[in-house]
Structure formats: C-alpha cells, structure tokens
Length: 141
Image (cartoon, rainbow, N blue to C red; front, side, top):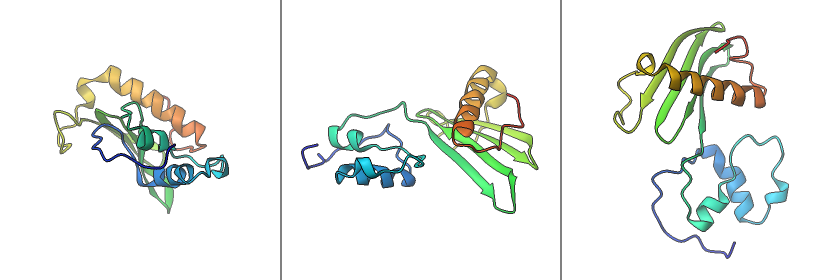
C-alpha cells in the first residue's frame, strides 16, 4: 500500500457507510487492530489497487427497536435488491428488484424469479446466522 489512492470512478463496488471503519483503519496501517466482531467489509485493497469488486453483497435491514421480529432484512448485490419483510416473526412480503432494468426499484419481480429468490433467501439466511441475527431463523426458505 504505497500511500496514494489514484482518482477513479468505480460503478460496481458497493461500499456501505459502515465499511469505512475497517477500510480506513486498514489504510492507516491499523489492520491488526480491527476487532473480530466488526461485521462490515475492509475494502482497502479495492481503494488502493483500483480493482472493482462486483462480488460484494451488502446487507440491508430495517429494525424496529420495539419489536426486532418486525422489519426488513435483505441483500443488495451488484444487480439486485432483495428484501424480506416480517411482522412479529412471520414473513409477509418478499421483494426483488432488478437494479439494472429498474434503477428506481419500482417493480417487484420476486414472483417471476423463484430460483433467484430462493438463492438469495439462502444467502441471506446464512449471513444472518453468521452474524447471530435471529430474524429469519424461524423462517425456512
């Protein structure tokens, strides 16, 4: 890591605000001090080497503090936004948007793409279990 970040535009790598914490620590030479509990991505190599990364999947969630079993959990990939809504732990809505053909995310295409929905459900469930978030543990995709 030489010291300068070359100016460029990256239209594929998704960087969430929370990714700044491990990324900036790493760039400053404190990679070893990033706590294991940090659930976000260290994208220092993406910034420093200039390589775009379209394989990163960002989590999406909206939690009601008064009822954590109600709200949204989902994933945002390079091409799609996928969310599941539950009320009191019971799934009541599945949403899938194709961000390429529908950049304003107006058309829910979940019913037309059951295989993709199942793959993303499985990926979401794995991520939630890894992070010890029990939102979808009660739901069997």
